[in-house]
Image (cartoon, rainbow, N blue to C red):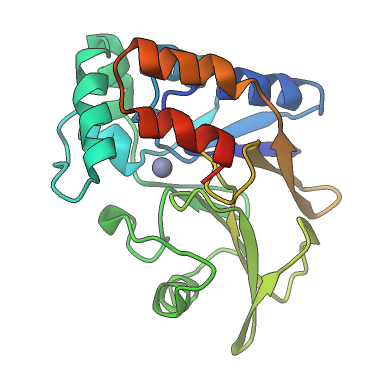
Length: 243
Ligand code: ZN
């Protein structure tokens, strides 16, 4: 089986379409979505529709739950808050129903997947490659060999070898039975790792290999739509910086 794992689309349908096209030509059997389908960019409805139609397993992110009023936006930045108010007004009842149907964690074969830290998915804790406490907590909670997360918009592969945790520098890793893995698949719609390309992962169970893949898309189209819809200009700006 070949699984594609995508996350943090954030209403950026131009990026999502490019990623789905890339997935299509890589002989993938099943797509998993780690949430934050909406929030920030101007095509939340189209993104929900595409995820619903193309993805076989999905979990919710904090923005998905905020869009249906399941969590409040008290901790959101000004930009996230402003975009969320806009998003709520531009989602159909049907799309909201789909978001409401998503849970916070899922498992298939040897994989476990959540939007944020697997240790406490309901708290939406960020696991950055330099957040020691969050990394320690996340690894301590693991039951599955392979754990996929998003939320930080920063792709990374970390593994635990007994009492050591290592950050993998390569973007392709062969899965060994003796380790535990925490794989952040990055963001489709709003990369923050100083690379404007969308990012996602492919897990090949036969080859026992996970690869992070970067996909170029025309962010100028998205930037134009941000401005036309009176969303914060900062959101357009950051797309080309990838941060
Ligand atoms: Zn996100």
